[in-house]
Image 1 (cartoon, one colour):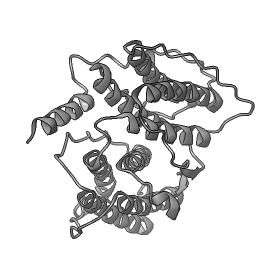
Image 2 (cartoon, rainbow, N blue to C red):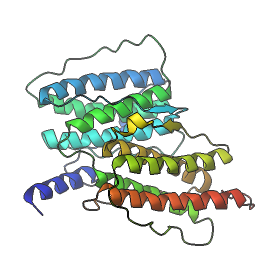
Image 3 (cartoon, rainbow, N blue to C red):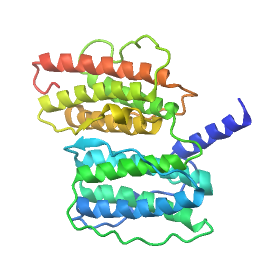
Length: 323
């Protein structure tokens, strides 16, 4: 392992650690926000963060994100907050790289999520960005977002995804297939808990490893997983967002984009787990070592097989309270 690789690995480990003595407490619940916070209020805060990030981007001389917004609809606040959690992760990594300071990752509340919860999460990211700004040889000029129309959770979701994409372009150690591999492993753990309602193996065998896969291939497989999750949820009267990635968008897919969707899958599976099974949440794995898209594609294949089994078992279940 080269010195550069070791340092990059160490950076990842520090950022994802939740027990570091150097971490600043996130303390999401201590951040006061109005109980009647609306999606428009959250959107306004995202615009303010985007303004700060744009100034940092110019200072760093990094490229601007040119990807088109993701095509999603019917987004709920619980889905938005997981993207906000991903925003905190990416801002945390930027904070480590620029000022060697990280915060503990805020925990998503185990209850019905409302816009006020999302705003708290977003403000944790904003505080870290402001700490970064104070260490730069420039002042971050304040922004005054001017919204003339109300915004929906779907609008907020899209704005956070775009912000996540831009932050990834500022990172020296960008979100990689290894990060996606870890997130999909967490999704597999959630699916295993759902699968445990029936006899048999909770984790499906891995499909054959295939050479030459790209992030877009992984995204397609995760989209298949997402459709099955949505089908399972709708059969139980639960709503899950819809998203679509066209051919033009697939050409620009990066590991960071795949990570965002993998994190969303974790959110949906956690929702099903909490709603239908109500067991304790599994823990995210540590750095799995260097992975390539083919490794991640195979990992996503395990998840796909699990979900296909769960859908089949769920559709034939007759026991009361079964999923």
